[in-house]
Image (tube, rainbow, N blue to C red):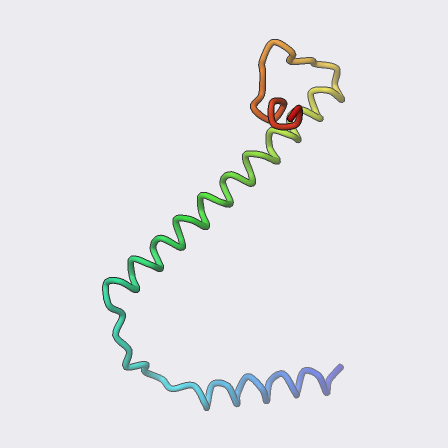
Amino acid sequence: MNRSIVVLVVYLIGCLVLVPAQASAYIDPSNTTFILQAAIGLGVAVAAGVSIYWRKARKKISKAIGKDDSSRQDESDEIDAK
């Protein structure tokens, strides 16, 4: 295990030596807009996934405790029926 730690430390030091301290790069507005759109899209996708699984988990929990919410129609029921 000591050998793997030494290898990791040597690798990290090598990376730090090879990476320049200052990157003289220009980020133009089109790249910034692309990065912003990607971040917003990722946020929306994560929110949609959480929403879907939250609804399914809530439905399973309500069935497990015996509380049937049949008066409320979920969109997921319509999707599953097709």
